Image 1 (tube, one colour):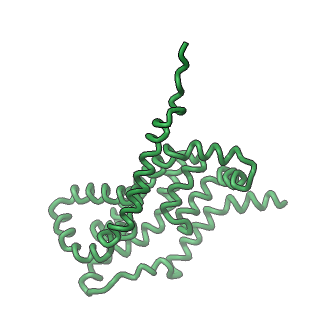
Image 2 (cartoon, rainbow, N blue to C red; image 1 turned 90 degrees about the horizontal axis):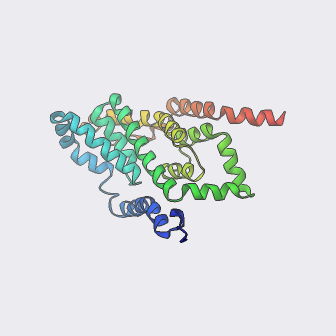
Image 3 (tube, rainbow, N blue to C red; image 1 turned 135 degrees about the vertical axis):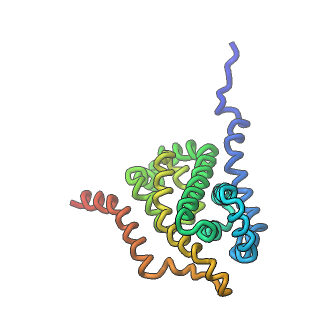
Length: 244
């Protein structure tokens, strides 16, 4: 009797799973080279009156278009994430602007997570965890403190957003945990930049440029660091228990 070839053994099946993440990487590189100037703050300055007029005439269409654009920017790792967040605040105010920004960023992050996990994540995770080296121990530690580590990665963006979307896909993180920690973890930063965006009307009228360094002011930075410390508390307690 002929032996059927498993689907996973078919090279074409393997490449078909890799196509989404490879396409995202290609678009990301292309966007960084060719679209950086188009997805910039200067573009928002030039077209802010047109955007306001369109929003006033077609509010729901503006919300839908904004969400689709934000999801695409994040999912395709295009430049302009900060500008998109500012735009959300400019068009919709702090509320519901922050809600639209968090939803768009979370959906985009989930899409790139799924693409990465489909293309490389499961097999790569199995290989890394089956090893005996430092990488396997690092992944095991991450899995034991999954919620805390992923929240820290989002609250304190020491890891670029693009890598923070990929790393969990390669370490076997569950989609539900990834989506929840992404949604919750990006709220503080989104709140700050949406707030800045909501005041852009006055900034444009004065011909000035917004101060994005406001996130480093003590009144904003200290509460964010406090949230980061709270997220990292379970890890610290586990380490203390081991030391006892």
